[in-house]
Length: 186
Ligand code: FNR
Image (cartoon, rainbow, N blue to C red):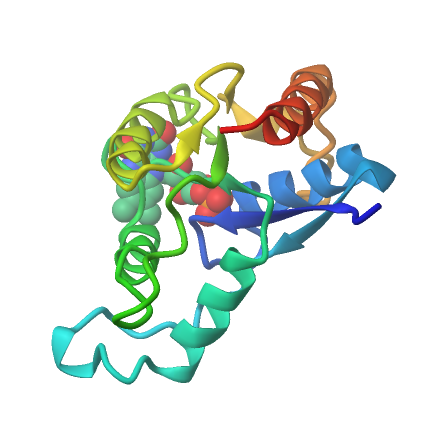
């Protein structure tokens, strides 16, 4: 049987990102139950209808990866009570039809949301904005459980590595539920 493929979309491009580290931890939590690929999209240009067709190579590449996914798992920081512009830019590209005969690649895809902040917010407000957007694009959103981690530095070791000393069980529960959610018909 084909292994479930989950594509992780991290809303931060920075090295050492808390959310990038959370995505890596999610891959470990999934273990053999699924393949988790972290989407590399730093080369995707700013969306501009002047360059939409033919799609730039980076856009073609991310679309193919997203198309091949059984589910998308978002790991996003909160910027000014929303999700970062780089993530909106990526989703705007993904929201567009590939060509005249094919639709966009997000519709119907199961989605899960997680986030971590150094402060107290835990990314809840950003997640709500993201849910509004991806629901508009007809993604199949798992609204609960979501993972929101405040005070992220408290779960890091002295080298800045995320240990998830407190939140690991919540991530495990979300992974389990997301696998079940993916396996259900839409
Ligand atoms: C932030 N940060 C932030 N944090 C938060 O909890 N709520 C917020 O509204 C904001 N706003 C915000 C705006 C901008 C422009 C930046 C750069 C940062 C702090 C943010 O959570 C922190 O930088 C995280 O470490 C970003 O996530 P990564 O890159 O570690 O994954």
